[in-house]
Length: 113
Length: 108
Image (cartoon, rainbow over all chains, first blue to last red; front, side, top):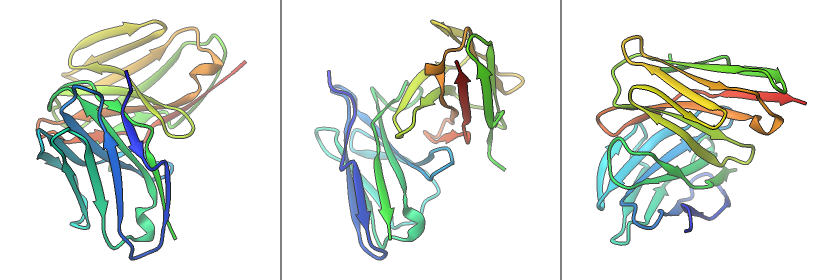
């Protein structure tokens, strides 16, 4: 079975641009979470979606938004990119929301110049 | 101050040594995770704990809910164990908070 997949693998954008990152969860998993990991730090929680509804939001500005589709895949959008948005963006899926083991994708490395 | 504190930040060991990584958190949680991250970014979930102790191969994880503390032990360490080990906690509002990670290097 395929694990969590993310696309693209790497991305280079310019300040002020917008970016969309994509995540496909493990088949049967209905919950998707997004995390930002800046180099040298632990990941930070951005969003969790379950059954197409936002179930949790971290301390990120409104420039960050996400959605989950009927097939449970998800997109993370970041508008008006800043240099500080350069990071590894990780997606994780789990069967349901709550205290369940999460399975992480390989991440999308975003570089903002 | 990070709500999830890990120690040590960096750890170098010789092959075969017993390793302990510690994690402390500040408020009540619903579960605690130990994760392994290799160079390049991929994260693997090692354990999810809400109480007691779990063992998988050479890895053992324990949690003390009253003391808000967890430990990850690696017995008979091997160079392939070299990675960053991250402690993360689940709060009841579906928020997940991560420690900064412990970088482990095991030398042959």
